[in-house]
Image (cartoon, rainbow, N blue to C red; front, side, top):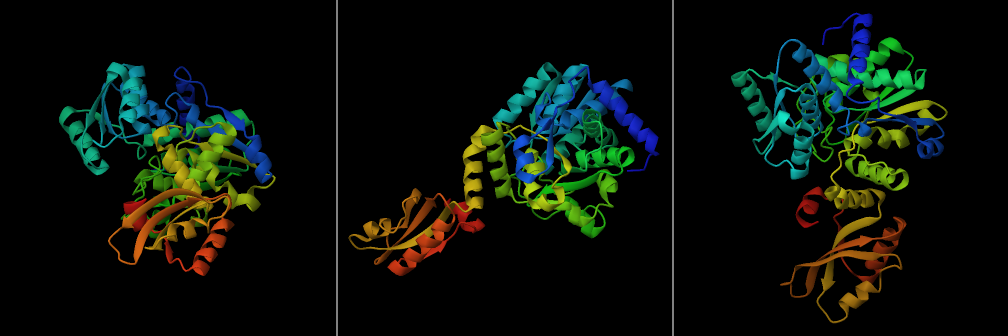
Length: 418
């Protein structure tokens, strides 16, 4: 992305922010007492999860569409299964233009229905492809055939400028630059826009960037000196699990020290989501919890400082809640799965049950193989109240002569058995 002179980008961001006010008010910047007390810092949450589409994506979509509408364009298209689709739909309805939104065939009905609700009669939804690459190719081919303008989710100058309006609001609301801003990174639109604006208006402000461990595209690009495509991505953090950071967004981030880019484990993110839901009543999607999730790894850096965490989205499908709870328990060490070799003799099961502690709860019990002559393999899931309880349980199993294998961290077996 070519460098504009400082005043032009800052002025453009401020104009973009002002133009959004008829559409929606500035999202709140809220001091969070729970997190502030926990970390001995002044922790403020920039609540992008409270935008009209429950994510910051409405900003980039609005800004890009408004500029093309001013040029006479009335036909748009995008490829997205999530927040970008909803932002585009909302903006198309607002401007009274036509949008075609391409989504993978595998997109959950809940996301399709929400996108339809935001776009109403202004958008058509086309389900194309089992994988996002196929969906993206279909959207771009449609734009070429129909003369529609393709709306990139992040790698677009106008989208980056639109996302930078989050930073405009932060400075206006806080009245003084924060010491540190923590930003989630997927394709890089939000982080590129906010960093660029704040580096010009509040150069003393420091940054930390957060990616999901299963999609560290910015880290990979910084190591390689340019964007590269990750061979594999864990899609659990679907709002930020991007295989390749944008070319334009990387140009705005290329001088970032690599140790300022943090990786958040997916299971720990689940723990953060549950904490924010149960303690604060704040619903965050996995990508929306990234900035909050890394606070525990920055304890010594943030103590006594003013820190802004951007909670980037709250489009969480509660049908995923059982999975989130499961992963959070496993990360905390409070739930484990193991395969037990149970002797095929009367009383063996009773002997095993007698080894369980008072807080050890059987959450799963399933015979995997019943044809063994002397032993049977049993899949067992145990929940307990403290992770040290498993050390005690496994010691008792060893002493009792019950062979077992802990498969909690075995991704391949877990995929098939759990």
